[in-house]
Image (cartoon, rainbow, N blue to C red; front, side):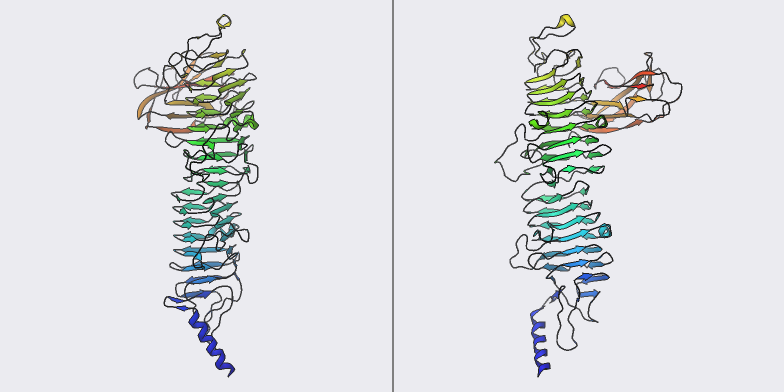
Length: 605
């Protein structure tokens, strides 16, 4: 009688878990039929060997001899894939998770193609289940290809996303869909996965969260649809390693987590921002401090932007409030270049908008002693106070635009920025020089009106300038604005400099060049000349005394970030003293200037 009852219970269980499409396989408990007819067993909640979830059932692992469970696979509690374990999920399989903290924890390898990871609830809701957590370098061989993830992100077991990559789990995620997460689609923390051709939709927070600053994911061809916040959320703090922030197609949003909205590039670290990358700061104390090197490599059609969280014009509605807020001056603090090491920084085709909050000295861009940074065709606008403040620094500003700042450029403590072919519009002051004994060169600039800057202080007796009828933005004494332009300069703008200000015999010399053009396609003759301490001049690349043109083709609305043009070792016997290097572009076959005259100086001792 006992055997008969057991058989009846087994048949009832079999009927309950069978469908026309096949049976349901449970991966957290043991399920048996009567007698010797084992439907499915997984005796432990961890996988240390190789297991395959197939469309016909479990293959390998702890499967019962010759018997299969079927579809779909139901996860009732956590499954761990140990460092020696491999879980393969075949195309067409559906994996459903029960309520709450159900997830996979992967220390080994998980490979899934064309798999649906979903909630087992009817109807489903965002956050029904947790996610898949991959941790460690052993998990780096994991792959998700053409998979779909939905209704997860429950924030259980420290898992906040459908896929969470940690501690070197640099996995491949390609062609996948992430929809209806209760928190995030993907989270990275010390890992740099490939995220390629994926779609993120209806995430209740951000589609992607880079929780630690040592994550540099590879982004390419992703799509973002109707997520609550349009952005990649970033933790704040110190960026420990050199790397590139690729353009993910939505802005990076600097959060308060980890450092109150402050980012720092320390010495010996270089951060590169790809063309089109947008960085938004959530709070008005948010800033970027650069002690190492920042290379922002924008183009006219894909500028790099640093701006307010409320700026929907740059990268969409990141704060998710529609039209309720608008950007305002002082919405974030500044980009601060704080050491001589940061002089190697280079920004081309960048926008720095709505900064200047007081914590960083009321300037959207702040340069301390020795921070001789190069800015090529950049826009600094809508600062709460100063656009760019230089303190005993000698930055190059080539073809830059300053719009709607209280003061566009402020020079203190002997700072002498080189302003070349820059344009000023609607600033309370264009340039203020507080160190009148050191003249600030601002030649060949446009001041907002063809009549030049407004200068009603007559210091011509001491070699200064006077332009009381100028209708452009005002300037202080100590500013050389000769040769002012009657309209804005749209490039192309050349930059040129050396990798150091001083060299000796045997040192590695690097000549660095770059350009940006806001105009249409054109062909130029470029000339590059070296001026010796004696005043003699030779021309690159032949190093002869006759001018040698370098034919250049510049595509429309294009830029080339700074690159190494010439890299010899400093030879012995070369004359010691101060050298200059100059570069300019001309219409082919003429000596009619098309670009600015770029220049830099260095010493051989």
